[in-house]
Length: 294
Image (cartoon, rainbow, N blue to C red; front, side):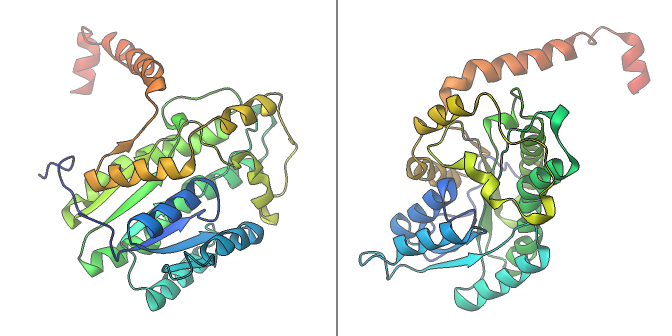
């Protein structure tokens, strides 16, 4: 069995085709900028919001960037047929995708007791199934190409522990953690690496994700929360998306499992792990439990 932590499927990104969901703003736009401007990749930006697409297009049309190989598509990542069509369009324009950045996500901070089915469906369809749709669309093509590749899933600090009013978001991001670890085990034999980004605060407009809420998920009874002002201040002081993208590319080239550049959370994550170990250790001397498992 391969030591997947030591495998490095891609040595560089030069000339590789990268597909970035949610790539017209925030973390995704940071990734697109760094990939195109600093690593020589061919970049496809996929996003749902026309105004952000226009802003990203304007950025890459500037005189010093207009020759960069960047293509921008409007895509609802919950639409599987549209995803497949986007993949065909990308291959026709740039060639096969070898770097998949499942970056798009939403977070409405809806308390569980006030959530509707549409609230749940929106979070899970975008944050979890959006990533699954990306994998299902591009993974068979990567395997058929036979040249390796890398899948990068965007999790969250809330992939490791939950905060108040984040049941919907945390559920989706805990699932991304499981998806990432499972894919890493399965895909090493194809020289396809898998990494998870674990952002803390990033200076983005992520609290404005309600603007991207499709009509099919419109039923909600919740419009805001008491901590929104404070959360906006935290995000405003967070890491610049371009800096996070640079760190991300370093982690991908090392084939890191988790790209987690927020050491201020060490104590909290350790406490979570201690809690798990304490619960597990309660049963170490239980003969009845061991016998039952056998």
